[in-house]
Image 1 (spheres, rainbow, N blue to C red):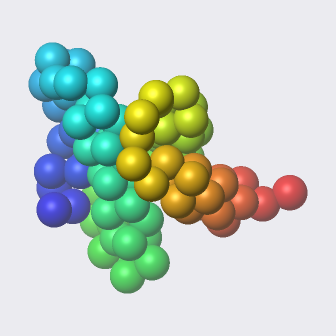
Image 2: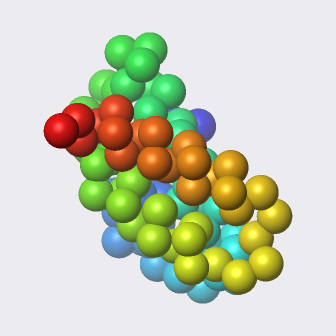
Length: 89
């Protein structure tokens, strides 16, 4: 899953593939890719050194603006937690 998450987040081909999908599918795929990379960081398995900080904000913006997304509050809450984890002030 780590390989696919990196593909979707960090390659032109992966982002292009997601742009051709339904907005909700694209938003949720991006969200779960961020979670996968976060889990890889926690397990010290991020072998490619993928930086998810810019993807957290993009995912947050996409999830927040999506209309009719089931569990939207849960997604936003998790992304806020990740923003604090990776950008402590």
